[in-house]
Length: 356
Image 1 (cartoon, one colour):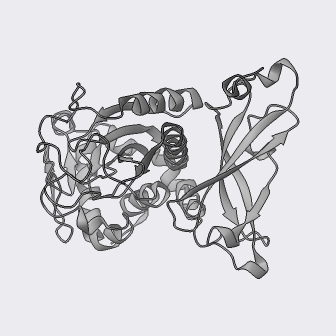
Image 2: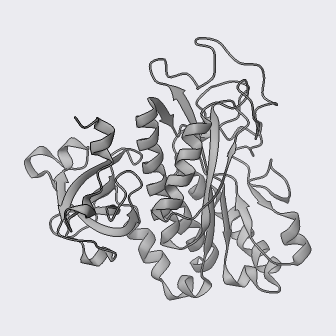
């Protein structure tokens, strides 16, 4: 008799050309990830060769019951680390039957910005640092924390090893390898300052790919925590008080910034970001005011600042960038629950297209 794991691990290519495609999209809250699978006659590597599909938008808060059909447009393909073989994960965005992007489709506008000739010529690179917290399933309290109590204060947990300091490493490492298998450009992982909190980094990626890759990396992490029986949260301040929040620091450069004399371009870009501080903050994630307090390695939400090697500033420039006179900078304002389509395209729009 086959075990369940034997059946899950069946290699379809031994007996059929058919593959399974898991279509992924973003639901009505802007953070809930949904997916469903369909069988295709054979392997596919080009999203434009995939069929459009639909789902019941009234069940995701994206359409009324009397006109509930939302259409999925396949946009990016990744290898499926769960089903393996020729099976794929498909990142989609969402449209009305008439072909209009629905209000929660943030990818549509981002793709427009990234395809603007001035933006495309600058080849914007992104490195996204996604922080997240793992919670015990039934009590919704961080992994490794005593139920109803607190661990020792922050200090020993950041990038630490040991059963009393690192909680959930099996999940983190599984996610790391699964993302690399899928074709996501994950550049690293580390334990964070608050126990039960971790970070992975996606990048460098160019333009719209940054958003596609981060969303699929989030989806893979949701699936792995589901298997492990652990709850994943992207809340920017999961535990109030003297504990670090969770952000999504966004590292950014353009071709001009990476070339000789780029430091002057970086300073001009930062000046522009300062002039649109309020607009950026309003688009940088829900509940961010609980995180950006001016404490715990953050700048105050109402004040724009920048500095070299300053982790308490809105924008941090690395020592190496200053020394080389070119490179990249880090926007430290986005919350862990930010939409990468919104944040990456907004930074490009402000620094490349916007003329104050």
